Image 1 (cartoon, one colour):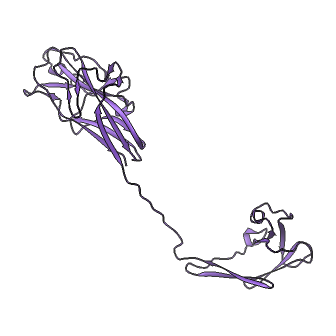
Image 2 (tube, one colour):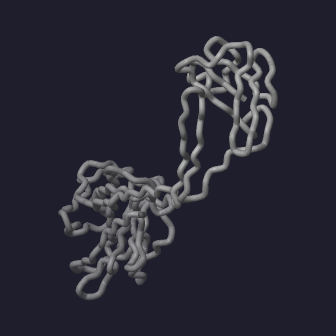
Image 3 (tube, one colour):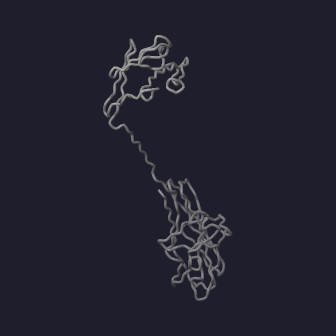
Amino acid sequence: DLKFGSSQSEVNGATCSDTATCRNAILAASAAPLMTWSAAWNAKILTLTAPSGGTPIAANDYVRILIGTNATGGVNQLMNAGPGNSLVGTITLTPDTGNFAVSLITNEQINISAKVAETMTFSFGADTSTIMGPDTCGSGDATVGANSLDFGFLPPSTPRWGCYSFSVATNAAGGFQVTLTQDRDLTSAGGQNINAFKDGITATPLAWVAPAGTLGVDTTYGHMGISSNDGLAENLAYTGNKFVGLLNFPSVREVAKLDTPTTAIAKTTIFKIETSALQEAGTYNNTVTAIATGKF
C-alpha cells in the first residue's frame, strides 16, 4: 500500500481515505491507470512506478509505504540485521537518491535503577488530654514523665491512670507497629506483685473492673492493664475501651499499627491500675519497653 499527502497525521494514521490531503494508492504487480501504482521486486530492490493519471506526489508530501503483513496483501517483510550489524536501504526518486540505515546494538536494553533510603522516626511523651472511654488522660492522679510513670500511693478500690502518646513517621511500604513489653509484673522488694489485668489472667480483653480481692488468692489483690485508642491494634483487642494485661519479655502487646507509609501518626495508650484492701504494702516497680518496628 502507498499513502502520501500533505497531512502527516493522516498519512501515518488510519484515516487516509483518498482526500485532498492524503491519497491512498494501491500497489499492483503491473501498472494500471488512475491511482494504481506498479510495484516490482528485483532481488532486494522494490521499484514503484507512478500511474499515467491521478495526483502525483508533490514536493514536501509525506510518504508511507506498507509492505507484507502490514499492507492490504502480502507476507514478505523487511528483516532487521542481526545484533551488532546495520541494515542499509536506498531510496531513489529521480533525480534524487538517499539512504536509510537501521542499526541494532548487541544489548538493546537499558536498565534504569533508583534508590530511596529507608526512614523512620519514633517518639513518645505524656498525653494529658485524650479521652479514653470514661477516662480522660491527665486526670488519673498519676505523674507522667518522659520516661517514668508514678501512680503514687494507691487507695484501695480507687483506679488511677496515666497516658502516653506514641508518634511514628516512616516510608516503610508495610507501615509500622508499636509494641510494649515488661520485664515483670509490678514487684515489691519483698517479692509481692501487682498482677497483670485481670487478676493475673491476661488472655481476654475486658472492660475495666476492680480486682476480685479474694482472700488467699494474691493474684486478685491488685492489677494493672493497658488500652489503646488504635482500634486496629492487637487484633481489635481495645475496641469498646477494653483492657489487657502487659506481657513479660519476649512477648509483646501491640498498641499501634498502620499498614501503609505515613508522614506522622500518633496513638495514645492508657496505663490503669487498681488495688484492693488486701494488696500487700510496699514500693512496686517494673520496666516497660516501647518498640517501634518499620515493615520495610
